[in-house]
Each structure stands twice: as C-alpha cells, then as structure tokens.
Image (cartoon, rainbow, N blue to C red):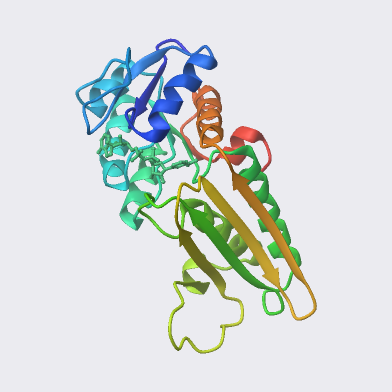
Length: 255
Ligand code: NAD
C-alpha cells in the first residue's frame, strides 16, 4: 500500500475504531470524511469522497445507505479500491455497487467478523443438505437501540446463504415482521425476526426446525472492534486486486 487507507464515516462508532485498527496494523491513515465534520484527533478531514478517493489506495466505508451510490461513482472514477460495510442498501444501491465493481475491486460484507463469515459458509451447506419442506429456516437477530435498519444486513446475508443452498431467490421466500393473523407458515419460507434494545453489538441465530429436531447456529459479537479488525484486514487484501465484487469469505479464503 503506497498512499494508505481513507475512512468514510470517520467520526462514527465504526469510523473511530477503524482509525485505531489501521494504526494497530501499521497502515498509513490518509484521513477521512464525515457528514458531521468532526474527525477524531489527529485525523485529516477531506472535503468530500472524491478528494479522499484520489489520495487513498482504499477507502473503508461505514456510513449510511444514502451515501452509497455517490461513493460508488466517486471511487470508480478515481480507480480506488472500496471496502464497504454500510448496510440497509436499496436495490438501486446494489446496482451502483455492482457497477463500480466492474471498474474497481470492492469487498462488500454485511459483517466483517471471521466468525459470522464461517457461519455464512456453514448456513449454505446446511441449507443444501436439509430439505426446505421439512426444515423451516428462521433467523433471529438482536441489536442496539440505535440501529436504523431491520432485519440486519447480517441476517439478510444469512438468509441469502440459506436461499443459495436451496437454489431459490431470497426475495421469493422471505417472510419478515409477522404480526396478526398471518396464516400458517409457507413451506420453504425463510423467516426473519428482529429484536432491538440496549447496547447489543450483534446477535444472530439461524434455526432449522423440523418435526423431530432443531438445529441452531448462533453468533454473538461482544465488541464491534471485531468488525473493524476484519475491515482493515479486507483493506490490506483488496489493494492491488483486479476489479471485482468480493466478499469477506474471499478475504478469509473460506468460499
Ligand atoms: P454511526 O452512525 O455511528 O456512524 C456513521 C457515520 O457516518 C456518522 O459519523 C455519520 O455522520 C457518517 N455519515 C453518514 N452519512 C454520511 C455521508 N453521506 N457522508 C459522510 N459521512 C456520513 O454508525 P456505525 O455504527 O458506525 O455504522 C455505520 C454503518 O455500518 C451502518 O450501516 C451499520 O449498519 C454498518 N455496520 C456494518 C458492520 C459490518 O461488519 N459490515 C458492522 C457495524 C456496522
């Protein structure tokens, strides 16, 4: 890495941890951007994403979904790699990310912890082995009260992994936010339940429930630093890669 790492959302909860983790990894911090115009001490604040992109080898982005399309265009124009952790993206945001990934290397993950990515890999294999009509897949997550999107990006990632294992599209079988007279569960549905409260960093359980047995895989993050460590690892990995849309599973070599 010649120029170093830039951080989008540098004043946020993740942004501040990324500053510390880049330093711990011995990577030069170019600076950051933030809507709030307040950077952690000693961090250079850039006027916008385009300026940050030009000066950085890679931009690590934990901001807000509304920023994603603009960041995609600016990073692609500058030819700067992108580590994208922001969640709650719309379909048009997804299109913008995919389009940027044709010009630059992008690592996008709803969750940068190694443990969750292992669970994602397992989820796909379990879903492929357990018939969807017999094993009802339910995903339960809990997060802190400030979280703005639901289900969490990680929960949706788990749902996508189960859907991939079953050879179906998540959008077709997704059932979330059940309330009132919902009727019986549809065969093959993938269900989501989101709990919010306190300062829970992130808890996810994937349950396969059949008539005679339940199998559950759970992950609990105690410290959001685990996401920052993973994102910095992804930043190191992605610099110099060919354009493409990579995941944390590619970074960890568990695909
Ligand atoms: P936060 O609100 O503490 O921080 C976000 C920061 O981004 C804020 O400082 C805000 O001012 C800034 N920001 C918002 N819009 C901006 C814009 N258009 N331009 C520049 N800066 C902007 O939130 P957080 O807890 O740090 O999480 C940020 C995002 O990362 C969320 O989408 C969250 O779900 C996601 N997240 C992902 C992972 C993962 O592993 N992928 C882990 C934790 C959080």
